[in-house]
Image 1 (cartoon, rainbow, N blue to C red):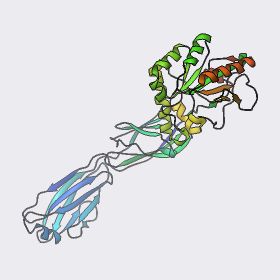
Image 2: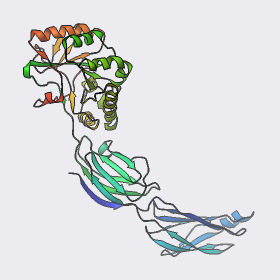
Image 3: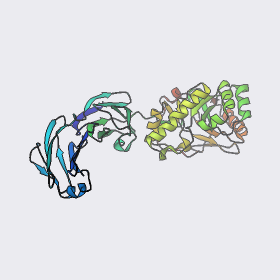
Image 4: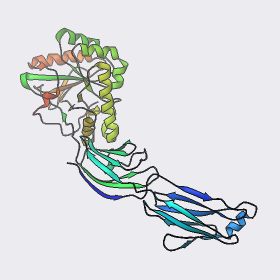
Length: 391
């Protein structure tokens, strides 16, 4: 459950009033400005017309009454008077000096910014306030990219990779603030699996990146109905789009390998979420099938990367338990022969066709069966707990 408690509101709203009184020749005038951010009205003198105006100003001061004890400025100085939010007051302003004058200033302080609603959503919390906010998002809570201004008077607080208890402070356009205490549970994390369902002696072939498509692999898929999962970098898919459309038409499965292949553990939650989400959407738009599985570049992941995958719309992250070297030699995680349920990693690089042929020989020697990889294959499988070593 998301817990919410109002704790205080700031002073004022997004409105600033100001005014000035015209001065007779040589007589200092009075100008004032209202600051809802600090709930004050500032009064100052302005020079009167004529050559003697500034000299007279230097020998004059203000006396302001009507808001409790009278206040007096230094010569040529200013007076700041606090005004309660939502109140209207009249101030008696006197100019004392060589050219004395007086006038009445009426000021009305707007009502304070306040939190009007806090509604739970599937993604986190939606906070509404009584006045327009600055478009710049508030600082992240708990060190996470969790806060965004989604409308003129609304802020969204999204779940992050860890539980968060903090005070959210929002700022109106004029600088006034309101605050709300929030307690938000961690968002759902997508675990990484390096093994999948071993039933029917299944083994899973996955190929990463996509910069160098292989005609030989495509021929094998068409001739033998070989199931292959390609974890594609969006930028690579865009460069060789006709090949990847043919790959999908041949029965291939496409997974998310991010937009540009960064080490996601070195990015913020927001940046990592963008890498997953934009790649997923782009691959779906280009190839007609939106990926539901992803593979973190370099096999590097942590709780933030897993939470970002959830925010990006994925349902499973895929590691590997075996790799194929440039010569076609198969290397398993424990140095033994391939076993049912293993996920094998290759790369779209020169020589891939040869490597795949060598892998298929090893698979047949172990009486294993290449199988399509889907999220359901991870049911009951223990997730990977530590980052892998790869590219």
